[in-house]
Each structure stands twice: as structure tokens, then as C-alpha cells.
Length: 256
Image 1: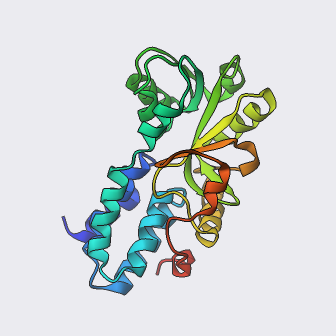
Image 2: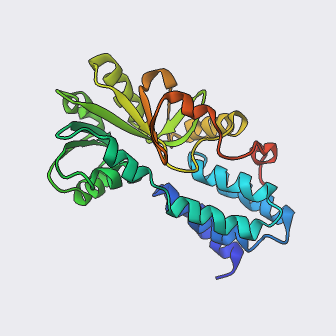
């Protein structure tokens, strides 16, 4: 497939696994490595279609400052595919916990490693059904309107960041309400932050504005969170102050 056609396919793709989306984009963008202007335009178009996808912002920023974008694309794919966040999440959860979680891909992958847990997934029907199918043990699904019921006697609440920064984080629609209910009800709220999702403020602000305009994500305040789970394990919310890519202001422009 021609690189441009491949990029059009990625741009038109619906909301899905952020890692799969970014990896597919990396392969297509790497083919434009010799034409910096075309690379920038392609990055802007992808981000216009998927503003909530932190790994895509991370990938584009890395490629645009790389001396060898093709090599950088391969390295980015490797980083995303070798991410250990799901394993770190599984290791951090206490035995026998009652876990209330959004039906987000990396989080569900981690929960699938812990069949001893009672898991209550909260989400929209398509993601909810897919998440429940991945899990063994005691698992139940709750619609977004049933989030308060899911929180009864919960040990911990999990939300997964699509993108994050010191100012807050973007997460799947419904995550904001779940985090606010958890803050009122008492169980700690952990945010799952896989590799490639902590952005510098200038990129996060642009991503948040666009994602809120399209309704593709919720914006959560850091104050609602008690801990961060990432590739290095459990840490304090202060970990969100360390961006994983450079501030590339050109990405905040409009594709022409």
C-alpha cells in the first residue's frame, strides 16, 4: 500500500487501541522520512482526526525532531509494543481487591493477569463487551449511568490516560464522572499511564481542546488521582510532570 493511502486508512480509523493506532501510523510516517514538509502535514492530519490519542502526539513529536525519522519510527514502535504497564498494574493490585475500572485496553490487559480479583468494568457497550470477554474470574459490566452502583465496596478505581500532563489527563468518555464519584465515595483512584502518553503542556493543551470539542475524551483534574501506574510501576501523580517527547509547536497548527 502506498504511504499516503496507508495514512488515509489510519486517519479514517475509528477510536480503538491507541497503541495499535500509533504503531500503524509509525510505519506509514516512516516512509515519508525524506520529505520533512510532507511528514509534518501528515502528522497534522492524523492528529486532527485523533486528537485524543496521546501516543500519536508523542510519535509525531519524536519523528519531527529526529535526525533519522525512519529509524525513530521503528524505535517508537518497539517502545510501545514492549511497554510493561499492564504487568506493573497486575503486580501492584492487592490480592482479592474489588477493582472498578474503565474498559480501556492496557488496563484490561493488566486485569486479565489477575483472575483472583473481582472486576467491575464501566464503559460504553462496545468497549465494555470486549473488555468483559478478555477477563476470567469474577467480572461484571456496568454502563456509564451505572458507575455509582459499581463503586459499592470498591477497593480501588482505575482510569486509563489517553494523554497526560501536569495540568490533567484525557481519558475515555465517562472516565471523568467515574473519577469524581470515586473521589466522593472514598476509594483511591489510580490512573494507568502507558508509555508514550505524558505530553509537554503545549501539546497536551492542544490535544485537550480538540478532544473536548469532538467529545472524544474527558478531561480529568490531577487532584482526583491518588497514584500513577506506568512502565516503571506505581508512583505519585508528580510523575505526570515528566514529558516523554519534545514540545513541537508546529504540530499545533492546521494541516494544509
